[in-house]
Amino acid sequence: MALLHFNRDLENLKKQFLSLFALVEDNLRKAMRSLEERNDELAREVIRGDKSVDGAEVGVEEECLKILALHQPVGQDLRYITAILKINRNLERLGDQAVAIARITHALRAQPMPEWPPEIGEIAEKALRMLQLAFESIIHLDTAIARQVWTGDDEVDELTERALLTLRSEMRAHPERLDALLGLNSLVYILERVADHATNIAKDVLYTVLGEIVRHRGKEFKRG
Image (tube, rainbow, N blue to C red):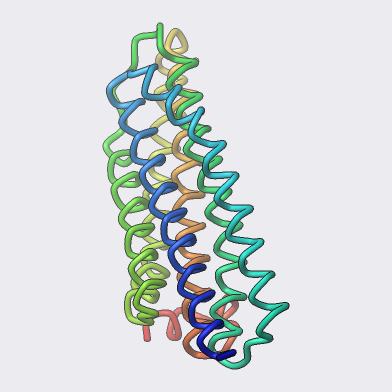
């Protein structure tokens, strides 16, 4: 009977957690679309939706703590719940990144937007893809996908450096566009953080499956 109750509670936790993950990913995509389309109403929707993210994050944490107190899981079950607690915090911060992008949309709504450096689109695509893969890795506890996410972080870092160099050059050449270019500069840092959070999630998946804290391991390990 105890095992039945544990499995029921664990399944309920998974549903809450995956629902939060999907909500955060959707808010990030909406925020990016709001900026690309200069859609202030969509930006406001993302900002309003952050309350739902915060509420869901608290719900997941409470469910984790309840399971730990009532069932005292061990082994991979314990590592899985511990990982969810850590990933849950990453998801709350990712929700904050979506709001930050939406606020850039709102701040720049009345200004002409300069042409984006091509690297920004690449960073956004890669960062959101990494988050999607991180989602898949935790659903399936797939270490190959988790390693793919971790490896992708190096590509985002390289693109980030290039994008920032381009934007600084544009700021010097076009000071009349400074506000908009500073907004894009902030966007690059936000997207880099999205990739960092996705990488942290991937590392927690590896911990869950392998039973080893891997965040300080080298390039050879993350590539398998």
